[in-house]
Image (cartoon, rainbow, N blue to C red):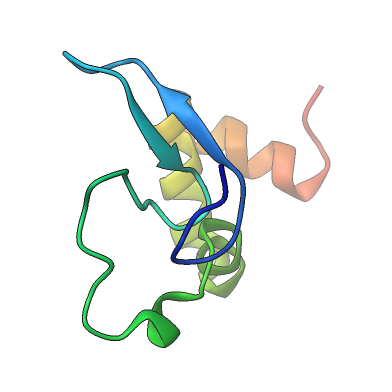
Length: 81
């Protein structure tokens, strides 16, 4: 099934009380409102991450992965082992 908002492939998300199709690119969930202006919502999560500065990206990734900021920072700089 294709996402009506961004056109990416939707995936079955079964981490809720009931299963629902969800787009991992733009966050659209089956049965939700498309929003007032669909054209403004074309940015993906990867594009948001790319727009962050280095420190914001390190904090975002470290919280999401459950790692220390220093470990993620070293990995992004290429010095992690």
